[in-house]
Amino acid sequence: MRYEQGIIPKGCLRHSIRTEDTYVNWIRRYIFFHNKRHPKDMGEKEIAQFLSHLAVNRNISASTQNQALCAIVFLYKHVLKIDLENFGDFVWAKKSKKIPVVFSPNEVKAIMDHLIGTYKLMALLLYGSGLRLQECLRL
Image (cartoon, rainbow, N blue to C red; front, side):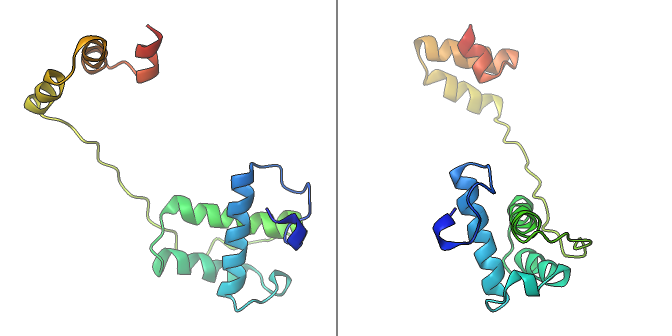
């Protein structure tokens, strides 16, 4: 986070550097979305507008929207010391349904035929027993 720029007070955030940078990025985007208005002059309505904009116009994932929400909540709660009451009235991004890829028996055979030695043994163990990769590696 850019402490020297005065966005977040030093020591206020005890997260990884990447989390800090991500939060600063979301806070900047929130401020720029509202034409550089100071967050103290904004509230629940502006937060809801920004989060809805991300879901509807930017088509972001639910986890990305949640990340933006966490950054904004952090800004108001820990930096500005403002308690937000209700900003849940916004459009939530839709969670994508992940459909697992299932190989046909012929595809599995083709893959196994290309492996040799220890790698083939490990692949057969993983496929046949349902072991997780780390469980197989510990054998």
